[in-house]
Image (cartoon, rainbow, N blue to C red):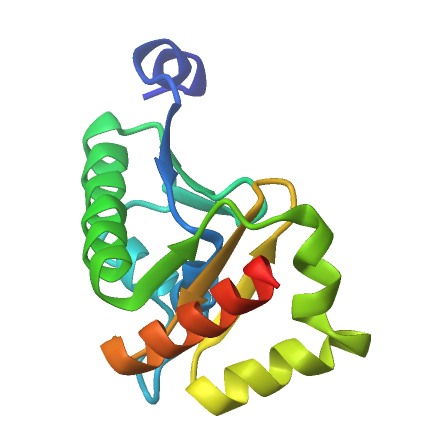
Length: 156
């Protein structure tokens, strides 16, 4: 098949999937001896498949000239996001803009202490006015403690 025929027959498909910013580390980091989830999601598909990560926009863009593979990978990303968001992520919103500095502390020290104390990872989303909390094992007690401490700062 000539390139011109290919271009006429196949058009690129781009599917946007909403993913909380806090999960992007989980998506991109290898886990032990396992490769990153992006690598796992790409396995078995054509080299035409692309997975673009946009953490600040909270989206993953799955693209391919082959619509079926773009749809399949996008669905995998959606299922992953739904499962992780329900079990590993908590959101505190709205979070007052004027309390962000208090939550961060000088040089981010207070936020790091809160993460260490609760064993969670915390992302401040200033533009969205929210705080996202993540615990890799989904420890409800740790997530609840972090959310309670964040709410205390928000209300103080």
